[in-house]
Image (spheres, protein in one colour):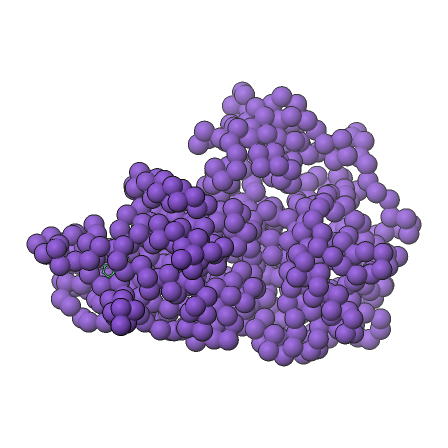
Length: 358
Length: 247
Ligand SMILES: NC(=O)c1ccc[n+]([C@@H]2O[C@H](COP(=O)([O-])OP(=O)(O)OC[C@H]3O[C@@H](n4cnc5c(N)ncnc54)[C@H](OP(=O)(O)O)[C@@H]3O)[C@@H](O)[C@H]2O)c1
């Protein structure tokens, strides 16, 4: 058995253990709304008030009804990379490589798979075709299912090959490989995420520009997402604490500070934005430009310093995201709200329906 | 001088002709440039890159077929990875279709589709991939390279002419939708230029009457620069712009 270093939830039992439900397979979104004959912004939206009150069930493009002039939406503008690569080892055995975190221009942490079995060994040499190779340098001591891998190509050339050889990371509920552009938000900027920052996917520019006309601000951070699953349920169940690279630009820090000073609400689009902003928050609950890696774990008893509300998707039972959500809303209310979503046939995962907690 | 200082510009189809002339002039005006063409003209693209580099301008070359959606996403992603933003997009790459140019009735359906995909769908896809980060900043300029053939129904210029008319209309609709955002969209008819495309379209033409692509760059510099910050939804004639400048 591998020795995993996992941060404990100091509050005791984790919210993901408190929020129990069974997700019927037919509620797993298999493809984006556009391929289901809907507009991007026509997915469902459950609005869950923070403290008390019944959830409201509406459509995502009605989002503006729940926002006020002076609120600030903060999005994650990281672009999604095609992070699933196929390689062969020295013996010609096929290996699936899921890139997880870019550590330097030619250095990645990656998950190595044979089917769903974790494999890998220091010194292993991988051949990706197209004259791209990598060597396994080491195993991450804190996350032993990840291997540090050095490519023999660097920079723009490596990125070019990742684009040419890779496909978007997907899980069993998405049956077919889909074009990479379907994994981008409408405001995506520089690539670096290995999975789509999906909370912002339903946002359209038509909706964003309307919100802007109504006095809602828009700001962005960049956080390059890691993998949401190791494909090994036992490992996933222990909620390994990934570190993710992020940047809060000065303009966003200023927008957040001004919004709070005016009494407006800071609304995070996605759990990645909560992590980035709360990591960068200073002791006096203000924000300055920050660049770094975050390992922040947000749970039920975490005092949120900057973020007042969260726009997010619907998360699987056991997902560590549920811990983060419980910083915004009581697990028992979350549980009831999720049951209502199941009863109404909401769709889960990155191409599914949405939840606003304000 | 330096009208494009600190601008990050992307020019599709820059291995020769107008695209190359624009890359060099934008670099001379202080811009960083991302240049592109398909693999078939990699040598030409490398030469453009070298000439831009000689001006000490930051440059990134990306081989990509802009009529393919995966290539468009790759081109946009590599550009943004390298420079962190793109301020100016010039949709210059273009397909003429089969030559000698046939009547519409004699045009193979596949060839018609390639022309439409390259001259209309590609600019749509590239704009779509890059306009979001422009809107997020509230600034940006998109320039579509059109043609006289898009305004006049010349015989044998069928597929190409239809595509350029569509591109002009694409320009108008984008501009209307983006009004007030700080992102502007315009098109330019460069006029007759002595390039590979021109010689293919009119093998018996009098090349001495065609201008060099280097001469039409001022209107593109103007549209890429902040000087045109309020200009959107317009169709420019490069020669008319030059004449007005001389006055
Ligand atoms: N020359 C004229 O008299 C004239 C007049 C009016 C308008 N125009 C317009 O001006 C623009 C430039 O024309 P030009 O005369 O300079 O043409 P050109 O000499 O044929 O150059 C076209 C460029 O586009 C590239 N290209 C073509 N298809 C591409 C694709 N699918 N993906 C990526 N790159 C592609 C070409 O390289 P590869 O083919 O190797 O990829 C080349 O670099 C075009 O939009 C044209 O319609 C020209």
